[in-house]
Image 1 (cartoon, rainbow, N blue to C red):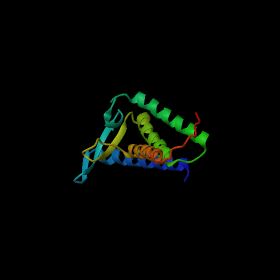
Image 2: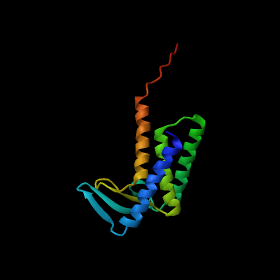
Image 3: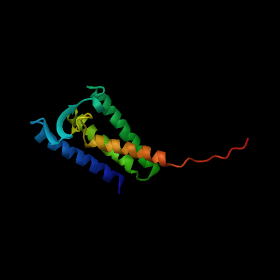
Image 4: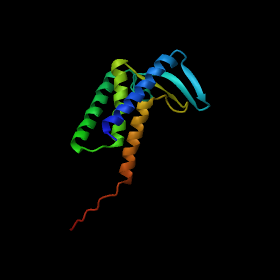
Length: 146
């Protein structure tokens, strides 16, 4: 599958879900779906867990930096990587919110973890996949003569 197609689908799914949440969930605040899972409307101007709350400009800059680094990686390596596509699409989704809404919309609520969204989920899965690839990679042996 194409890097940009996956990234676009992540971005699109994230933005459509946030559009629905803003229009239908915001007026009611929260809906219980299961005993352990709610849809809860939250606006976040910080990072994950509301770290650096109110520092939207910093996160716009950081998101742009991540996106630029991923684009340079793609141009240099010329190969598809699902983990980077997920991170790229998620970063675009949250960047779009920060630029056009002034905050990120969160709504997935397990009550034992801070509220998050699909962009956060894609970024987290992408980072997990990178670590998994690194752990599974066989170490290179180097012959060294003394």
